[in-house]
Image 1 (cartoon, rainbow, N blue to C red):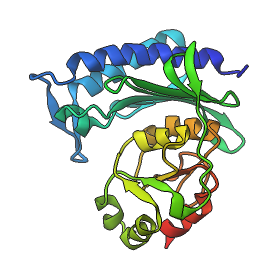
Image 2 (cartoon, rainbow, N blue to C red; image 1 turned 180 degrees about the vertical axis):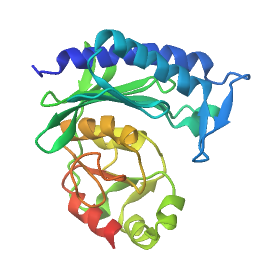
Image 3 (cartoon, one colour; image 1 turned 45 degrees about the vertical axis):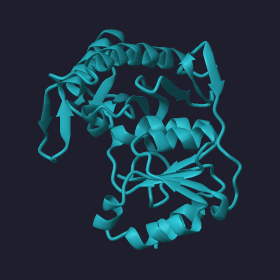
Image 4 (cartoon, rainbow, N blue to C red; image 1 turned 120 degrees about the horizontal axis):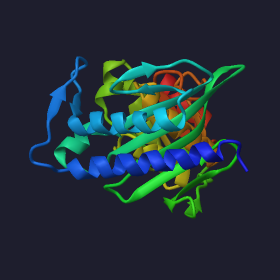
Length: 264
């Protein structure tokens, strides 16, 4: 049994509370939405869900640090919870059901912080995925009603399904030519976006995915879930984990070739 089983149980409790709060305001006609300094939207539901999670953590894990998208960093120490209250806020405010609460626990080791617990809850899709270090990755309604995740065994880029978020990010960073070459080489491409491509890599329905610019709270939960499902999660520079400001995830068999296209 993982040393982080109790933390994983807590992550489910946190997600249950967040799901109730976010679903209560989803498609609400009076939902309040503001524009942040980086010109991205934030809704009252984003803030309420993060405050709710922080409050639970303060009571259950008062010594742990917390980093969240909406309210920044709080506390110090070898254990740090990473929160994205609504990953996919643009979908949320438009009534598109592809959004999720992302919760991760990172612990400090010799190589810095690494994610050891990850949970992604997408209540409008009726889906949840989770993992703990060395315990495998799962999807289901609860800890007791779950199916183990396993990445695909596709070994050729020409047979691969590639998921991404948008073209604009790659173009803005001068990486569009390599990205387009990759889309031409793959069997299939789809722009699902946000957390979902990583979860599909973990469950084997997609083989590779990548994004050119991300924050830690976008990646930490996804990283441990993909890895525990047997895949690889790195930055575009090949650095393992969610530390590079961008991400590439795969079934492992295609990872080096994936990075080769996106570096070119």
